Every structure is written in structure tokens, then in C-alpha cells.
Amino acid sequence: MRFLCLRYNDLRKKSDRINMGIKDYVSMSLAVLKDIRVIATVIVMLLVIEFAHFITSYRKRAKKPKVKKAAAAKAPKAAPEKSEEKSEEAASE
Image 1 (cartoon, rainbow, N blue to C red):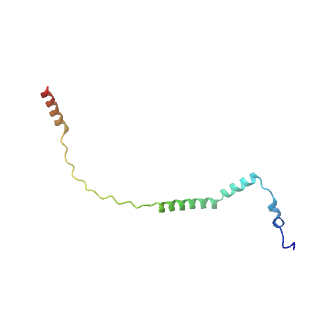
Image 2 (cartoon, one colour):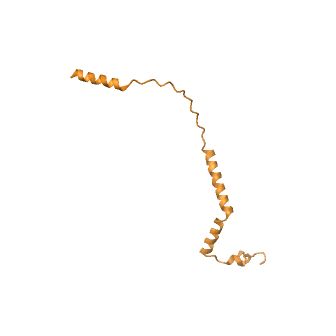
Image 3 (tube, rainbow, N blue to C red):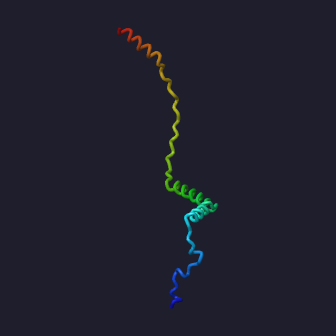
């Protein structure tokens, strides 16, 4: 019966029982983050996410109608109007 009731601790390997310190965790994490496959995967996923966001938020804009430019009418010169105003002011005095 004991053979059927093996505990998890009995099945663990000797290498599993080694306690890792914080330095070991940091060095392992840095090694994983520096791996070229991880960096490439992150870059590709960022591009995929940005493209998906562009697709989901895209709205087609209406085309602006082409407006023909009308011939610009010549504006009356401001100098004659001012001279008329000055002459009216001189006449009223």
C-alpha cells in the first residue's frame, strides 16, 4: 500500500530542494529578458497590438468636395474713402 501512496516530497529531485536566493532570481530574470527571442517576440507583439488598435478604431472620413476658386473681385481702395471722410469732417466744422 505504501508504494501507491508516495508523497510529492519523495518524488522531488535533489536539485529541486536547492533554495534560490534573491541574487539567483535576479540573474535568471535578466538572462531571460536579455534573450534575443524574448526581445523579438515583444517587438512583434507590440506591432501586432498597435495594428489591431488601428484597425478597430479606424473611421472612414468623408471626402472634402472640390471647390472651384471664384475670380476674386477687386476691392475698392481704402484711400479714397478716407479722404471723403476727412472732407466731411472738415465741412461739418
